[in-house]
Length: 117
Length: 109
Image 1 (cartoon, each protein chain N blue to C red):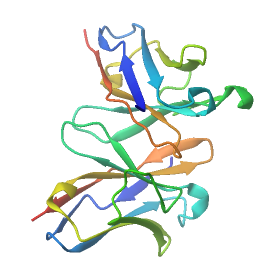
Image 2 (cartoon, helix red, strand yellow; image 1 turned 135 degrees about the vertical axis):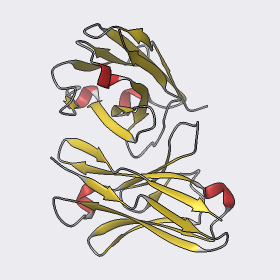
Image 3 (cartoon, helix red, strand yellow; image 1 turned 90 degrees about the vertical axis):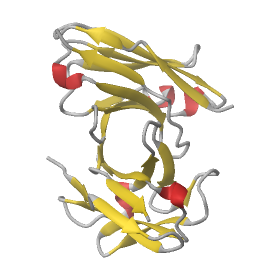
Image 4 (cartoon, helix red, strand yellow; image 1 turned 180 degrees about the vertical axis):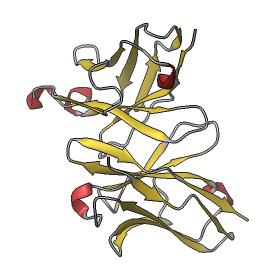
């Protein structure tokens, strides 16, 4: 079964850090460009960042609001995607989804991150 | 700043046809923006329906189709069913960035 399963969400104070994981199964993870997308409570979808494949140098791109604070990485040996989030702000509170590139069109179920004092 | 605009809400009757559109403030939407359409029902994760303007995934019902229409990306639902009531988001690729529209809430009644 094709699946993406996020984990690592929780409650963190402003200025803190958190690392999210996304375990992939049922498809060739190493061949896929991978994305993180978030959704604040009651709001729409917002693209966060992307990592390309190893053959594309695992290059990363980020949305302006998270540039310099968030880092996307991957471990193809474990089929896991990561999102390291530093200097968290209250406005980072959201459900975080990992997704594949457009061709595969796979979404995880999401993990909730709450940034609050 | 790139802004992608969708109709905030639309209503359609069961069995009817409705078209949702997706515009960019940078100009006409073309296939170079690789338009995607994503469906989200309340309390559920998003689900990809259309990619690269008009390509369907294996799970995409035949009644959904994507196109370019008058400088915008478009999602057309033909023979709408009650289960199609959901929020629909378009996604456009702007260079290295991806930008979602604000979503269209589709009501079927």
